[in-house]
Length: 321
Image 1 (spheres, rainbow, N blue to C red):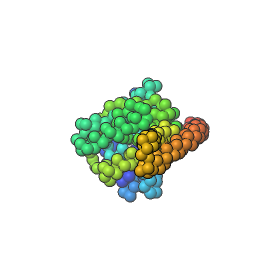
Image 2 (spheres, rainbow, N blue to C red; image 1 turned 120 degrees about the vertical axis):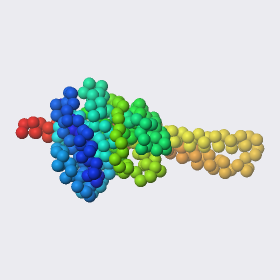
Image 3 (tube, helix red, strand yellow; image 1 turned 180 degrees about the horizontal axis):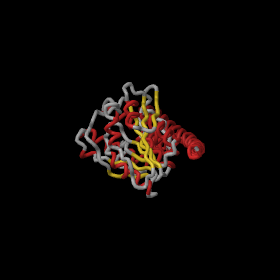
Image 4 (cartoon, rainbow, N blue to C red; image 1 turned 60 degrees about the vertical axis):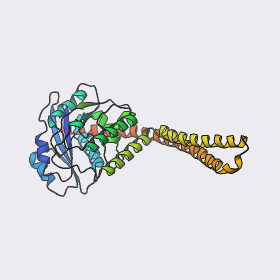
């Protein structure tokens, strides 16, 4: 059983060694542990620090491409190197490395394919009260969209089995944390959480410049993921709401007609007709989007099969060598 721990990095020379020193060197049930960093266009000597420490693999981007693309590039590299389990953690040593054993245990026991570390958000000193509240609201929204019970959706401390990693697709350019949970929940993957510990803050978060920017990007990511995996439900809810408002206005106009007072309410009739038509068109758009989502599912199945053949070929080739 081979575990590869991947760390996305962007100008992390000052904190990377601290994070690497905190990682486990052995875990019961794991035969081999290797380490990989994704250098996301760093301008400092992040790569040199990693190589001097003894990191096995380095994925290099010439320019900064963002956390989502870095995460997927890391998964690709880990799968090609024959990883049976992949753990993602941060280069700022936010998470306690010893808790990686907690993350991989449900996978080793065959109880889950994805395990997410649940941070003690309310007890984390460097989180402001507003950030704590937003973390809880964001996680609740993801639970509703994904139909999972993940209590800490934004947590980047997580483990994937090889089977789960083969199925992962991230299309947004912001972050992988929210979209992958929605994808896993909607595709009926076995996902669970375990409580983990966090370390004192070494640097400020670089994921977002402002709290408003974080909220906006997170909500857009959740909505987009929900639209991709449950488009008919999404458009039906919107279309039904618009149609219902139009129907109420239409009934109101008919009431005035029966009362002989319709002359001054033509605007209501026009608005009602517009809303009824718009609601119906939205529902039709949902049907079309649902057909596209079905094709997407077929493409994802084909992609998984191609990935499996490709990665297994590389793994067997390395074994023969």
